[in-house]
Every structure is written in structure tokens, then in C-alpha cells.
Length: 225
Image (cartoon, rainbow, N blue to C red; front, side, top):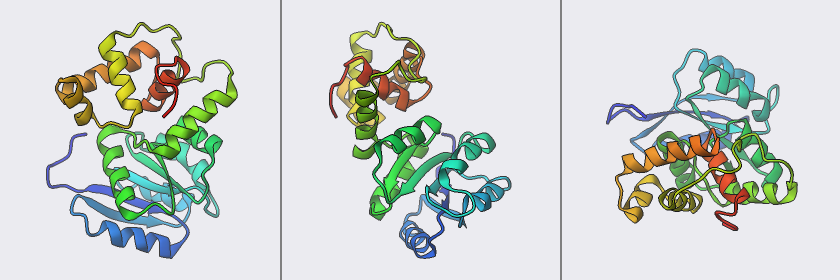
């Protein structure tokens, strides 16, 4: 993602609880590389904001009046497709997490997550598109095991031939390793790892990193996380 070195990541918090917004904003204000540029108390308010504001990451509560986070997510992706969206909820619901990831969510956090986790999710989504955690990984795995149905949309090509290096990198991605960590482990540059990740998407027919994770589960490249 191209951004000036000293320019902070621009964040909007969309949540109908004023105290929660204030708490998150206060904790993020201590970080020089993140800046909360606006707040919204429902999805409609948020949509109106992003039509006129350039935003990098949105913290989006699922349960809001007037227009909830589930209805708002696809609209955000239409208006500002490059903006990363982190869903916030009180509920750990596997089917909901998978649905939201398929709709374009970049991560899913419970509202009990501490401020450092929220900060890490913002940074990781901005830099690497997705922030996977035990919630998202468990949901993707559980959903696939329970469905046992035809391959999800994200998995178009069932018989991609992956070489050893590609398989290793895909497995490491499933273990929540960052691009830099993977690069160190396989002794390649981060840029090369990113190129292989893009090649994996093409080979497997996956549009997103979430699709790659699902591919890895479906094809038993990993069994459990």
C-alpha cells in the first residue's frame, strides 16, 4: 500500500455506543501511525461520511440501528473497494464470520478485544489485506467441515498443481505468519513471497487470502489450525 512514511493510517469507527467509540479512539490516539478521522453511529451515517472522506480502515460494528454492519459492508466495498473493514461484534458466531469474510470483511474481532489487538488488526489489514486470528480461522475451518458441500465460490479450480515452495508458503499463511516471517523462514525476500501469494491466488482461483485459507483446508494442505 502506497503511503507517505509519516502519514498515519486513516480510520473511521462506526458503532452506536458512544463510550465504546471513545475508548477505542482514546487508545488509538497514543499511536502515531494511526489516526481516527471520523466516527459514525450507524451504517447510513458511515456511508455518507465515506462518500466525502478518504479512509484506509473502518472498524464496523455489526449491530447498529437504522443500517447494521452486515447491510453496510457491501455498500462500503462498492463505494471504496480499497478500504479495509474490520467487523466488531459481541458474538463469536462461526457462520456469521464466514459470511462476512465472503462479503469482503478483512477481519472479525469481538468487542472485548484489547486495544493492542485492535491496533494490530488495523495495521495488518492495511499492510497485508487480512488479519487472521483464532476466531476467523476456526470459523473458516468449522464452516467447511460442516458444509461438506460443493466448493465455495472463492475456490474455483479444484486441482491446482502447487509446487513444494508454494505449498510451504500457503501452509505458513494458514499459521498466521506475516509476509516477513514467511520470507525469513523460506529464505526469500518479502517481495518474492508476495509474488508467490499472488500466483497462488491465480492457480487456486481464489480472489482473496481468505479464499486461499479455505482452499488449503478443502484440499487438506492443513487439517487443523
